[in-house]
Amino acid sequence: MIPKTIKDVTPKWLSKILDIEVTDIGVTKIGEGIGLLGDIYKVDLSHSEPLPKSVVVKLPSSFEDNRQQGVALGMFEAEVRFYNELGPMVNVGLPKIYHADILEGTADFVIVMEDLSDLIMVAQSDGMGAIQAESAVRVLAKIHSVWWGKMESHEFDWIPSMIGPRIEFVTQSLSDMFPRFAENFGEYISSEALSLYELFSKNYLNVNKILAARSPWTLVHQDCRVENMLFGENDSNYVAVIDWQGIGRGPSSYDLAYLLGGSVETNLRRQHEDRWISIYHQTLLEEGVLNYSIQELREDYRMSHLQGGLATAMFTAGSLNLNNERGLQLVITMVQRHAQAALDHNGIQLLDEFKK
View 1 (cartoon, one colour):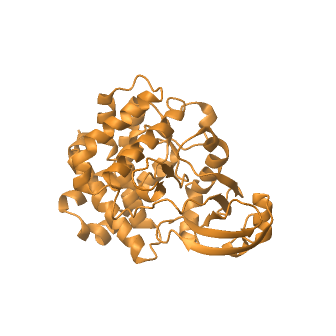
View 2 (view 1 turned 90 degrees about the vertical axis):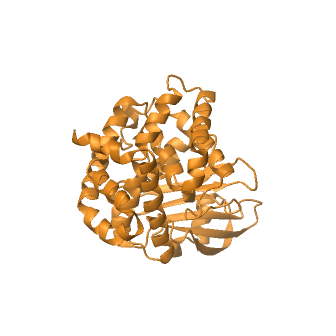
View 3 (view 1 turned 45 degrees about the vertical axis):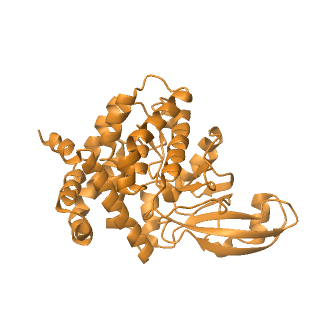
């Protein structure tokens, strides 16, 4: 049975899922303003076993528009299947999953995972510190290396590609929503940044096609931002990456640019960006990735600032139910930082070349 709401997550249901006798639970909603497509809860457990003392339960958003968006884009099914089929292949950077299930073709799903609330969550509006960013790019490279050069195999056709129907749908949606985006968020960015978004809204698929044709494919998170990461204390290099509902197949630079462009304060990114790119590449080499030079990565990274960050900022701003002030501030931060990162890497010049 898949719970319809958190009220259906009972001690009896959890006892079956966790294979322990749960006598009582306490529920706290967490991630307010973060889980735009899902509602996330910490559930404290009363039982006689030593572990776990609590779990995290993820259910679909209580907002119908957000639920339908998740179904239309196949994101709920993708996350459940990722945790059940692909997650076990990764030995770093993922939470333990106790249970993941979905009623195919619907928004009815549940994921019960390890509670990592003792780790540090960083608000995207604040951004990662330099040490956290270094740890994040290392873990990202290790995860990418698992499927490096393998994602063009037909066995992974169930994962949307960066040039497939989902991206075509998003590209058309971006073009349609630009006027509303400009009206609602134009005041928060420069005229140059707004021009960038207008050009980008017509060329998202074109950018993806260029990168997909020239660069090795891997499994890409596609929403790789700091609020989908949890960090160890102090200088620990431990990082857990969560929220795998938007997975895709394509060049890894998508995630790298998305992370550094949107989850680091702009001046800090400018100061350390080149070093972080080098660390990411060196980690790929250490994990056995061959035939991908640092020069190729730098060029891909430059163009990838015209991918997920701008798309997610526009799509979130223009289509999802931003039901609280924190959610609105999150989107404004994304809109501003991703535009500046793309401008820093000559984004308008690159997009103008599509006109020639």
